[in-house]
Length: 77
Image (cartoon, rainbow, N blue to C red):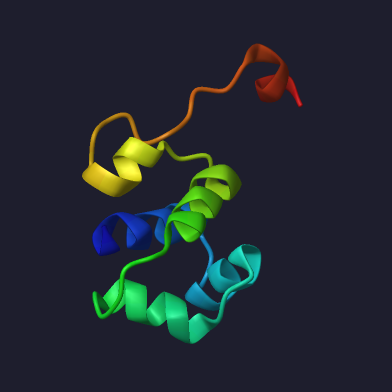
């Protein structure tokens, strides 16, 4: 999972610090997740999926596709 979270951060074009701010967690916690020291909670996983539009099955297990399909209205917005 740590590699997939690192990919979300890279894909968003943000720093770990900005990623932590968007999730309302500490940068230290994100560093621990990215280094494999700790695993994110279910809430953190849910927040990552919601905020960064990634599939939970992809984040947890690596099952494709990565992104949540957007509706036509969401694409236009």
